[in-house]
Amino acid sequence: MIFAELALLPGGWARDVRLTLAGGRLHEVAPGAAPAPGDLRVGALVPAVSNLHSHAFQRAMAGMTGQRAPGRDGFWSWRRLMYRFLDRLGPEEVEAIAAFAYMEMLETGFAAVGEFHYLHHAPGGAAYADPAEMTARIAAAAQATGIGLTHLPVFYAHGGAGGQPLSGGQARFGTDAEGFARLHAAARAALAPLPADTRLGLAPHSLRAVTPASLAAVLELAGDGPVHIHVAEQPREVAEISGWLGARPVEWLLAHAPLGPNWCAIHATHMTPEETAGLAAIGAIAGLCPLTEADLGDGPFDGPRWLAAQGRFGVGSDSNIRVSLSGELAMLEYSQRLRDLARNVMAPEGGRTGAALWCGAADGGARALGRDAGAIEPGRLADLVAIDPRHPALCALAPEQLLDGLVFAAPPDAITDLWSAGRHVVQGGRHVARNAIVATWRRAMRRLADAA
Ligand SMILES: [Zn+2]
Image (cartoon, rainbow, N blue to C red; front, side):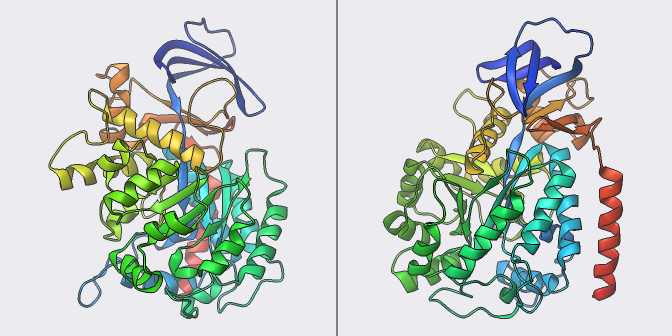
């Protein structure tokens, strides 16, 4: 039983809300209740958010790419550094890094993660004896931290548009469609011991990494599970796909792929107004990664057109350069303000921006991960965040202003507790296994530094 002074329910803020959890789900949600002895008392309860896009291993290279490359630095020079970095990563390092990143995600308000997992093979590209070796490491990190996992094994067959061969660091990602089917089946088996809220989807990496025929082949494995794809992140990618397939990436997907509400378009940055309207109308989720997109110089998402078309969105920490849910949401809004010379762009007229961002991302993120969460109502997974309304950064705010305060103004310690499918893994602002996870991470970082 949880007793919350305030809780953000689908109809708005309510006072004195008593919640009963059963089997990882919300069983009863009773506003205007009296607390009972033994209830866990919290301040303000809001839905936790699903982090819809992560490459966990990249957490360990945060801070290593700040030296300017010759000429114009950008996404493609960053990618060269990332390929070089991952040459040093073995299964043990990946598990330690993922556990650290997932712990940080939970502490910042994410209850679940969509792991866009392409590090399949050993350095150099040799297959591991167990094709699910690396998936098992991600699964172990999810179990150690209690984060909800939607695992998205990545199909990566080609090194660039037009079916180019893989090169260099890409050898660790590569399979053909049959190899991917084996890997996907092995991943399903590796996830079997995880809790019932675990999901398996799949992710064609991008149109750069597949051909139309191989894409169609792997999509047969998807069923109605989540399908994620990187799309239209960089102008050069749009130009290369247009030159090869005769259509821009989103335009091509709209015409040729079986898109639906189970699809998540990661980035979707460089879209025409027609592409924006078309993708939104299908019910696909826009998977926005504002901090990474800013870090890589990708460009701002077209928020006003997407929202006008009733598009759904969620946020992902992607490269994990900084793991911060409020940071992602604030950057999403600020990127719109800087471009449009306007304020409160992601809110409906008269609405509040913090709530529009938080609740939009909670709903869209959960949908993108195939996770029955995103709102505090009976039957849903108990993905919950408690914040302290008496925190110095929040104490002057009315309930309806709390999410504005949390997203734009408060330091991370305003979050006191988090439950992922009922697992109470953040207490007193800290992950319950923080010390052990950090110690393992430090050992892994020392090995990586020695190998450099
Ligand atoms: Zn990504």
